[in-house]
Image 1 (cartoon, rainbow, N blue to C red):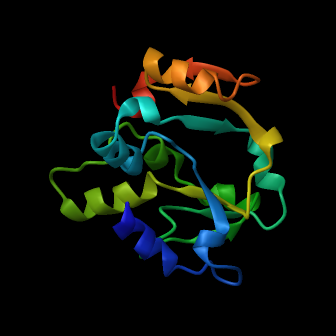
Image 2: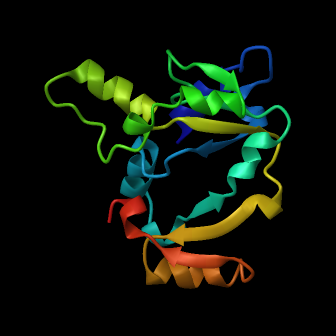
Image 3: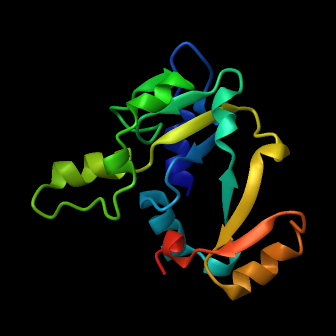
Length: 158
């Protein structure tokens, strides 16, 4: 989504590098961004990579306690920074708060908390692949034959 990439392009992680120099790994794949993606794309073309939590111990990894381009994000060095994550909000099923627009906006950013890995995630950290349906599984299985591919339709709001 160009408007999101333009916003992220302007972010510099404090005492570090531009946000676009990092691989962003959402802590919870079932988030506001995934919701936008599945609304605008063919579900068979989308997958989620399950990454080994040992990635937190790689050099210069940063934890963002909400979407890294939000106005009120806190960046912390990993692995200690994982303690800044509000698990109840990050793993909530929904981020909408009909009674309070501010709470909806804030929770929408928090549910998109990120692990930021400089440059690239080494392939050995990829554990498996999640897809929404059988059609997506068939598309992915041919390209990643050494990884398990599992259907987890709830990640894709199905």
